[in-house]
Image (cartoon, rainbow, N blue to C red):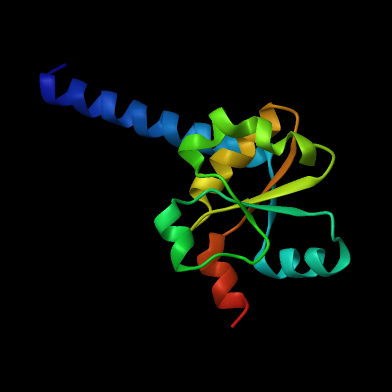
Length: 128
């Protein structure tokens, strides 16, 4: 094998690993569409919304009543969510990628966590 072939093989393996990891995370977490979440919020006042975006993103807009813990701070601030351990925590971000990671982390720590598919972008589109 030539050096360029080896480099391409390594890059391909990394890409496959990243997609496989995301696929596994996706299967371990429940997903809500914006319509499903809207309905669930009407039916269940015990749902907790967790915004995992940055402070600047949250300052632009957020879902009313949500808790804010940026994804990069979640591991260190998990104790703040302990009081919600018996409730379902639905994570959201801009597009649903960071919130999937957050929901998977919470799920691994024994929380009942879910993800908002499409994030706040889809939520806004649905709730115009």
